[in-house]
Amino acid sequence: MEFFYTRSIPAHPRIVRLYGSIVQRQSSGPSVLLVSERKCRDLHAAVRAKLPFSTRMRISCDIVDGIRYLHSLGLVHRDIKTKNVLLDGADRAALSDLGFCTAGALMSGSVVGTPVHMAPELLAGDYHASVDVYAFGILFWYVCAGDIKLPSAFETFQNKEQLWSKVKRGLRPERLPQFSDECWEIMESCWASEPSQRALLGDVQNKLERILEQALKDEKSPGYLAPDEPDLNDD
Image 1 (cartoon, rainbow, N blue to C red):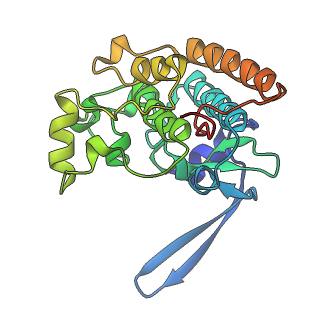
Image 2: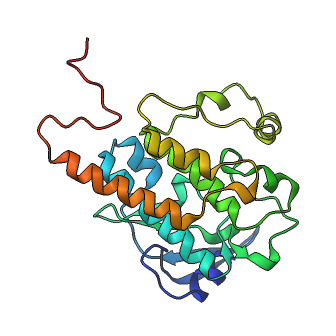
C-alpha cells in the first residue's frame, strides 16, 4: 500500500519520495524492501535532541503542509506521529510511511494507526480526513513539550482498550507550563471529540506561521528565553 500511494502521487517536498522496491523471497514468504529518499533522522529523535522552538514550529508548518497536500488528493495518512516524520539536514520535514494511507472513499471499516494518536471515531471504523487533524494535535503536543515522554494523563493505563475508553470520554494530554496560549489553542482545536468541530488545517497553518514568525523575531532579541526553557534568574 505504501509503495502504491507514494509512487502514484505527484512529487511534493513534504512527502518522502519513494524510488522503488526490492522483493526478497524468504521461507516465511516474500518481503518487500522499499527504497526511499534518504533523510537524516525522524522527528521522534529530533524532539529528544531538544531542537530550538522556532525549528519545531517550522517543522510543524511542514507537517501540516504535507497533510494538506495528501488531503487535496483525496488521501488520508491515518498514522501521523513523530516517527513518521523525517527530517533533512536543514530540519525540513516530510511525511513518510504511507502504509496506512488510503483514499477517502475507502476509509470506513478498518481500525488502523497508533493508539495514542488515534481519534475516537477511528475505534468505530467510521471516519474521514479529520482523523489526521486529531493526530496532528497529539503530535503537536510532543513538539511543544520538547520531549517524547507519554503524557501523564495517559500513563496509568495498562492496555490500549483502557486508553481508548477514556479518550472516547474526552481524555486528552494535559497542558504543560511551557505551552503558550496560542499553541495550546491549536492542540485543543485539533483534538476536539466531534470531527466537525476540529480545526481546518489551513487555519492551523496560518496560526503556526504567525507563531514561527514571532519566534524568529524573539530569538534575535537580547536575553531571549524559549517558551520551554527555565528562567534561571527567576526566584
